[in-house]
Length: 400
Ligand code: ADP
Image (cartoon, rainbow, N blue to C red):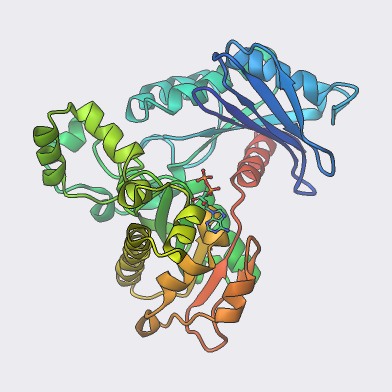
C-alpha cells in the first residue's frame, strides 16, 4: 500500500510517501515557511539530487496541493495517478486521554482532536490543518491519526498522576501523558525482533535522545512510565528544554526577573537545557567539540545530560523490578558514542556492560553495543516514526 505520511507543524509540513510492502520511501520532503516570505518545498527521491521548489505558499492546503502536484508530476513524480495513494497517516501530537491508539479519522474524531487541542495549543491545531487540507483535496482517501501520546496511555495511575489537588485532574485533566510514543513503540518492537525474543516478556528502557528527549519504561509490551509529562518539558535535559526543575525555582525566577509565566515558559523551553548550561549551542556535536577543546561549561552540560539519563535508567529499572534491554535512539542516541559511554559507564550493578569497540562502530545503524557477558542487552536502534505511522495507517485502513 502507498501511504502518504504527513507531519504538519505551524509553518512547515514534512511528508513521506511510503510503500508499506517494501518499507521503501518513494519520495519525501518538507514544505517550509508556510505563510511566511520565502516559502519553498525541498523534495527528495532515492538516488536523486534534492530539488527545491520556490514560490508563495500561503497556507497548509496550498502546500499539500503543491506536494501532491509534485508527487504526480511527469518530471519529478513517483505516482502516475493520485489514486495510487491509498491512505494518509497524520502525526498528531496530543491525543489526551481520549486516544489510546491510532484511529481512522471521522468527523467525530476531528471534533475530539479539536477538544484535546487545549492541551497542546502549539501542535494540535497545526496537525489539524493537515487533516482539513487532505479532506478537501483527497476527500475519498481514508485518513488515520497517529498520536505521540497514545503508546503511553497504558501507564498506571500511580505513574501518570501529579501529587497536586485531585480536583485539578478532574477539572482540567492535569496529568502526565508522555510523548515520542510512536518512536518508543517502534524501537522497542524492533529491538525484540532484532534479538529474536518475545516482546511481551521483556523489560525495556527506551531512550529517545534527539533535540527533544525522553525515556520510556516498557514492561511486558506496555509503557508503564515515561519522562515527559503533561507537556514535553519534564524529564531529561534536552537541547533547549530544562527537563525536571523545582517549580519553586520557577516561581522565584519569575519574581526576580519580573517576567510573566509565558515568558518564563519560553525561558525553560527555548533557552535552557544544553544550550542554557553551555551558553554555546543546543547541538550535541558542537557541545562535544567544545568540551574536547576544554570548555568547562560544555563539559558540565555533558556531565549533567548523561547523569540525568542515568538517574532515569535507575528509576525505571526499579519501577519494572529489572531490565532486559536498553535502547538508544534519536539523533544523539543513534550517533553519539560519547554520550552512550557516559550513560552506561558505572551501571554494572544493573547488569549493564558496554563493549567499547562495538559502541565505537555503531553510528547511525542498528547494533548491539553491550559486551557478550552483559546481563542487559544494550542496543542502538535508528528510529523511524514515519514508517511506524505508515504501518499503523495500513493496519487501520485494512481493518475498516
Ligand atoms: P529531532 O529531535 O529534531 O528529530 P534528531 O533526532 O535529529 O532531532 O537529533 C538532533 C540531535 O542529534 C542534535 O543535538 C545533534 O547534534 C545530535 N547528533 C546528530 N549526529 C550526532 C553525532 N554524530 N554526535 C553527536 N550528536 C549528534
